Amino acid sequence: MDIIDSLLLGVIQGLTEFLPVSSSGHLELGKALLGDTSLPKESMIFTVVLHFATALSTIVVFRKDLLEIIMDLTKFEWNVNTQFVFKIAVSMLPAVLIGLLFESQLESLFSNNISLVGAMLIVTGLLLLLADRAQNTTKNVNFKNAFTVGLAQAIAMLPGISRSGATISTAVLLGIDKTKAARFSFLMVIPLIFGKIFKDLLSGELTYDSTQLTTLSIGFISAFLSGLVACTWMIKLVKNSKLKYFALYCGLIGVLAVCATFFNT
Image (cartoon, rainbow, N blue to C red; front, side, top):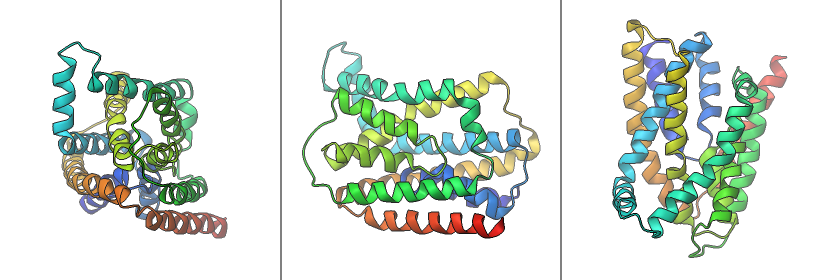
């Protein structure tokens, strides 16, 4: 992987982590288009670095919210922010369980499975269309909603299903305020990303050598900066009900990916 490839893949990750078009799906498509021939373990360290970058960009965008949550937690009271943290914990359960029980099966899907990516992008597009037509409300996330949104997040572990698209759409279809749905969607993934990174580090499966430093650094910076832009932009898009444009995009890319696979067989 050269510098240009790492820059492009970093931008793809940063934008698609927050925009509802599937970061995992686009990374797979990007690697296929760029002819990424790196070994799975070499590719894994790059993917981990990109996810770490987008997690940091989320923290920067929501730094005031996170600081307020931390301050409220130190009060040891059952206040709004303490309840919010427990809702995040509830939302994590499905993804954690499925990730632990079916890790190898999920990893096997990330091997240039372009037809699957295309099909799941079409599913993402349909979800976004439904959410875009939903009426806005002032409803907050409750514990039952948090678990349901968590199920959507677990399903989004499939390549091509947008995590932000699936979780935000599910929350909106449950009647949750669109801005609050976006906020919950972005914050609920932070502990999962850091948990996955920590697990990968402990596993000893991540390989790294000094020759990767430049490409990893460029990928990290491009993912972080593009993530800042995409996260802020996505909150406004959800609030203004403009998800239909991404629905059309996902549908188009999905159909092209499926057709490309069909004609190459």
